Length: 335
Ligand code: SF4
Image 1: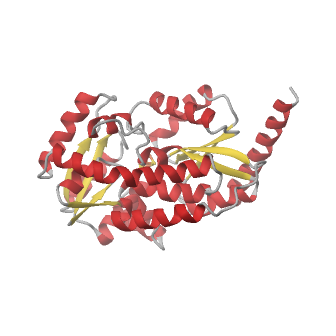
Image 2: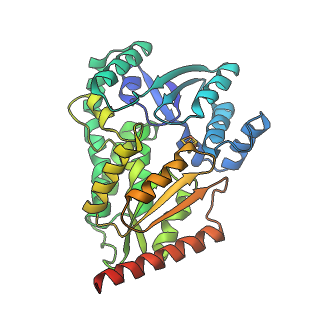
Image 3: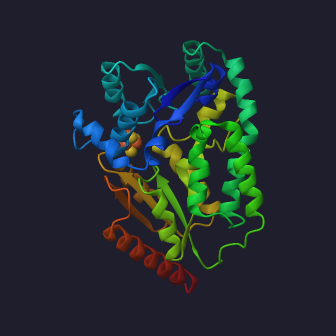
């Protein structure tokens, strides 16, 4: 299969049906042993210092290791991708654009999927068959999610890893399926986390420091039992067709669609607090205003810059936030 770089979660069923192996450039970047170097490649080639680190990292990955074919999402993800796409064309990459509809509309989604299928030499029937092949694997990812918040035997970091990887199934569907099956059976013999740990939600784009972030919170007595966007990547509302699946996927659309999903999960998962991650120089950070005025529980906003580790400053803020959540929970008990 020809490899194709993707800049975010896309209808990968269409790519697989067309004989392409999607490669999520974000995952390659963040799992690189030296992500700073990939960012420097972009900066050396002229990316402004005040461009989001994810964009520079994606570019660095492509310049260093390809693939030469890239699918860029121009609507429903990142405003910077449009210009990234233009620079990639300049560097002789073979770039195709995909635009999610401006709002969740099944008919329009179907039209865009048809166009995409045509561009990749396939059709929606073949993509639908791939969708059926992926369905049991997506269910396994969602079972990991359930084991996180309901059975309390999966860590926030493990949850992040298995869900975020569904954007390209780590480029090897069979391997992903067998590894996640093994992981789930391992979880069944685990002791649950203590019940008195705080239950946290993580909303916003995935963090630049997933390794340290979740385990640091656990060391402070708080567990992330809801990774909003990562869960969306796994398609928790698959509907009855490919068009419906990507219409129910909340990330590309209005923040109010995300908000209603988040509110439902806050209740279902009995969350005590929310951490909203925003990336420096990202337009999505403005949405913090809406989350702050719409969510009725303690919320901490943290901003990632170009550090791939938790700074002492950030650690102190997380510690203070967890103390505050603990106190507000106790105060509610005595009301
Ligand atoms: S964090 Fe924001 S600016 Fe950066 S790639 Fe994602 S959407 Fe774009």
